[in-house]
Image (cartoon, rainbow, N blue to C red; front, side):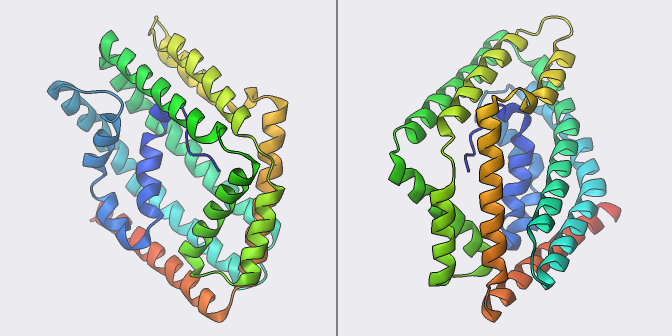
Length: 286
């Protein structure tokens, strides 16, 4: 899986939220500091002056309140759904349903987050906007160098390591048989890094045009974001679909083969995550 999306401008909050939620033991600590961490992410791409920093904080406050009040309880429901799914044999269709929950959560987050991002975008000077876009182009070059120079074996090795590491975060050490399943899946993946980077490059060109901020630019950007995935090339869309199926089948096979020890680790991780999400929701109610 690649993590470089040149629409980072609209994904900063998602990354901040999910980075914390991915590590159950630090979820509460991380989440309670998003009002500091999100501006820090933003300033990794563009330097804000003091007034702009204050404006961003004002925009973030209602957004984070909304997320804690309305979204975190939905995340608890998703965790419950995962716990139910792994109680018996985990079917491919169940993974698809869980993924739909996650995609829906992302869409809601994206739509709500676009409001403060666009508001901040209207406060930037032309020089700051150029700085932001130049940062994205620089990151694009870094990813091209990192991914396109890999040979076929390196691609497989990276894919295997990513899959294994992600699974071991929730299961503990994989068995020899489970590693073989992950390795087989890595070999079955369609290599789409070149197509992915090409799509990112096209999006960056479009973004640079939209962010000239001609009258009506906010709505045009929202519209472009909404249909972006529909404009993927057929080859890229097919690769995404193929790889999704390969990974889902591998994950379900490995989860269904988990040992008692791994099952205990998984359930403890899910329990900790659920408790953290509930605690954060209660903080907002209080």
